[in-house]
Image (cartoon, rainbow, N blue to C red; front, side, top):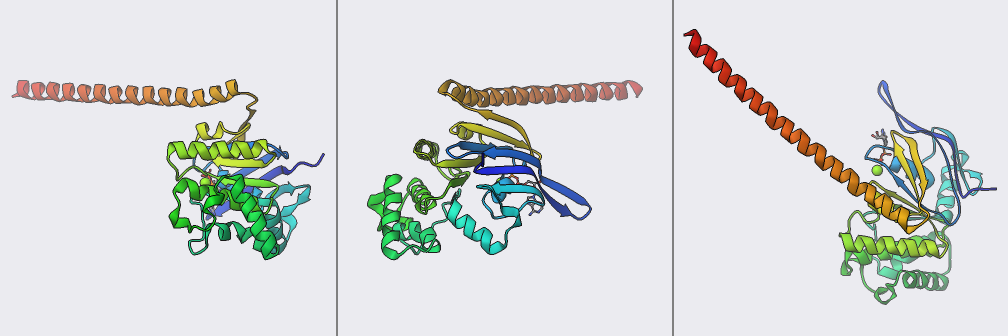
Length: 280
Ligand SMILES: Nc1ncnc2c1ncn2[C@@H]1O[C@H](COP(=O)(O)OP(=O)(O)O)[C@@H](O)[C@H]1O
Ligand SMILES: [Mg+2]
């Protein structure tokens, strides 16, 4: 069976003088059509590097990346760009809308690259805007919209050329909590309609919107779990609350240890002072 995304021993190494940074270190995994996968990990764990490879913005140092069964690491830059336009829709933290274009013109941009006629572009862009429920703003300029609305437009743009995969890099990073939740709900709805989504985030609560979580550490996959029902989703979010409580506890312990140390130090001061006096 051909997977939509397949990593076979994918490595991405950076040579920094004497050192080698293993940003992605021998990763093998598959993602199939219709999945909603979150890639999670701390800063520096290799998320962006993975996303760049999945998104055909970069190629592996070694190993193979197969997209729809095609080994994209072996393609020319032009061919890579062509596959990117045809196969992938991107959503970024900062929306990246073009300020001088109206909402609908922004959504049409990928369709221009894909070579659709003007009439067809309008039609497809409008459909995209309807899908994310912001069609009434089609004539507005981006700066006339709220952050959440701009992110909706950028999602419509990602969808407009009907890509096989939507790649979202911290899509809620610039939004307030409630608006962020709405965007995640929208991604869940799009997934329920059949869109394949890969979401990159450092936050487990955001990752819990997905149906599968791949956790990276030091460029390696250290966990790959499915979320099959709402109980498991709640469990995953609960683990964050648990982790936060543990971190708080640890911080409190460290604080009280620091106070103890200070007290010890001042006891020592007094003792030294006393000894000095006694010496006199
Ligand atoms: N262009 C680059 N040159 C050198 N090192 C890089 C480059 N890009 C990423 N790295 C290193 O690779 C590791 C993974 O980075 P990255 O994929 O950006 O992680 P994340 O997105 O999870 O924060 C980090 O140690 C980072 O410093
Ligand atoms: Mg990153």
